[in-house]
Amino acid sequence: MDPDFDTVVLSPHLDDAALSCADHLMQWRRAGERIVVVTVFSSFRSERPSPHLSTVLSALGLGSVDEYERLRNTEDAEAMTLLGVDRRLLGFVDAGCRAQRGEPLYPEIADLLSGRPSESDTGLDRKLRASIADLTRRARVIAPLGVGNHVDHVLVRDAARATVAPERLRYYVDFPYARNPLRWSRMTLRMALHGPRSFKAISRHKRKVIATYATQTGFLFRSCPRYPEILIGSRH
Image: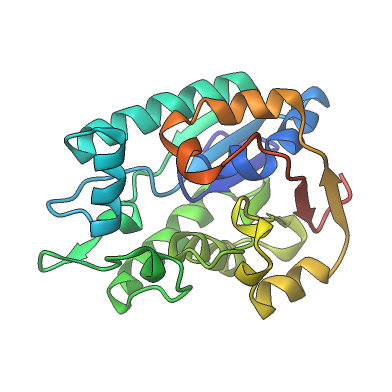
């Protein structure tokens, strides 16, 4: 990773950083910081996607996960351009595509949002820690808090906690999951209440950024997004 980056933002998927902390990114960029958004689970390679992902593909009228991956990457590249930040992909496989012996590890949405990574992801956890340690040696790191208990968010958060010095680590509250009080665990609530917090009302430009994720917005929002951003561990 380029040592000149001031801030590394860990995004589990190709939209999480924009959904959860775009206005903070724009503030830091205006202040002259060099920022890179690192998407961890950016690949959808799979011989057999989960039933949940298959439903998503069908709803979008797509015939393959390859086509879905190309669209997701195009959307994310446009969003990062609008934010004015750099973009890196780690290429780990999305949970909806991970399988063992031909069987999906997380077949349904309830499995994805269980907060309990499969035992088959143990080796993945070690690889994540090594990758994150390598790319975040000196920069400030912004990781997902894990609200919503999506297994990929939990894996990224825990890998960051295990490898990044506490004084360099901050968290963003995961939206849109955080809009539902039932999606908060005791752990994420306790972490959110500890230390300083930074809030930002959603800006018009952020709404434009979010709109680039056309494959996702129909599933995530029933109306124009109105939620605030919350950054944990920093007042800025």
